[in-house]
Image (cartoon, rainbow, N blue to C red; front, side, top):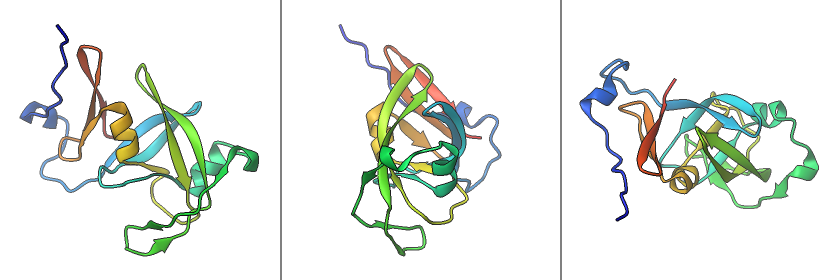
Length: 147
């Protein structure tokens, strides 16, 4: 019999958060070989996005990048023309998933945004209210706390 854990959030998941709040869900993720802070989890984003500071911090070389020629819509509903794309591993606990990051050359208070591609690959559910991401691993549920 296959047991599949249920991903849910309860009142107990709000412990250690200040309520009420309207905070974005920011996490620290291991991208490549680095612990990257200020990564926004956005379940409304159809793309995983990397900003210039992270691109520079990871020391990516032009030959590591692939061309990307589709436009994106920014938070302020302006058209953003991405530069390139790169496939990188994200480690969350014992799980490692690879995602395509789209590099954009614009200011952001975040180092990166992980959206539905990362969430769906991991099988994760995010809650900004609870400031957590939960995902199944075998017969257990692991979580990433917002920071």
